[in-house]
Amino acid sequence: MCAVSRGWGRIFSFKLFRVGAKLSTVCINMFSAGRLTEAMKGLANPSQSGVFNQEAFRYLLDSEPKRSERSSHFCQILLVYWTDVQGRIGRMDSDVAKIVMAALSRSLRDTDYIGWYHEGRIVGAVLTVLAQESMAQVSTHLQPRVLEIIRAELGVEKTSHLQIRVCQHHELESIETG
Image (cartoon, rainbow, N blue to C red; front, side, top):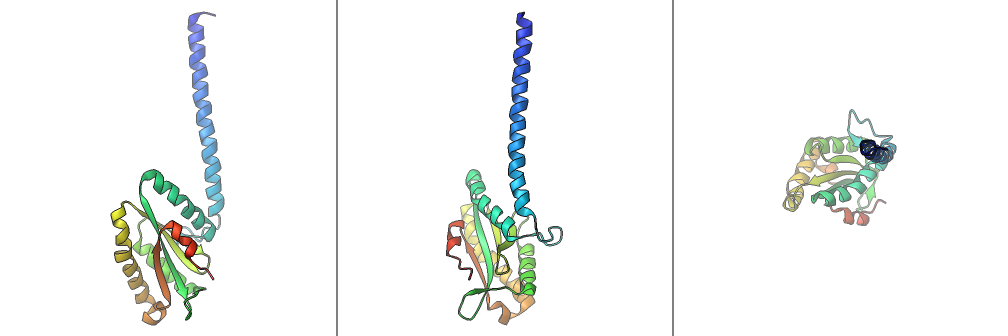
C-alpha cells in the first residue's frame, strides 16, 4: 500500500472514530433525557400552569445542586405549606394551592422551577441564584411579595395558616411532611 493510501486510511479511521464518539455521546444524552422525560410524565398541564408533579419536581430539585456546583452559582428552595393549629403540615386545599402556584408564577423568573415538593401538601420552587449576595434578597424581597399576592387573594385569616420558608438543599431533610 502506498503512503497516500495509508494517509487516507488514517484520516478515514480518525473520522470514523470521531463519528463513533459523537454517536456514543448522543446515546448517553438520549438515555439521560429519557430519565427526565420519564420523570416528567404526568406534568400537571404544562402549557397552562407550568407546575411539575412531585416526581418531576424532585428530579429537578436533585439535579440543581450538581448544576449549581458546576456553574459556581447557588440555588435556594422556597416552600409554601399549610399548617394546622398545632403547626403540623396539612393537606392544602386545591383552591389555595392554585392561588399559591399563581403567586409563585407571577413572582419568579423563567429559570426557576415550581412544583409539588410533597403532592397536595407542600408547593416548592427551586430558585436559581447567581451570586451569594443575592441569596439574602430572596428572604427579604421575595417572601413578602409572594405573601402579599396570596393575602390579596385569600385574606389575612386564611394566610395565617400558610408558611413560606426559604432554605438550602441540605435543610430539606428537616421538613416534616406529616
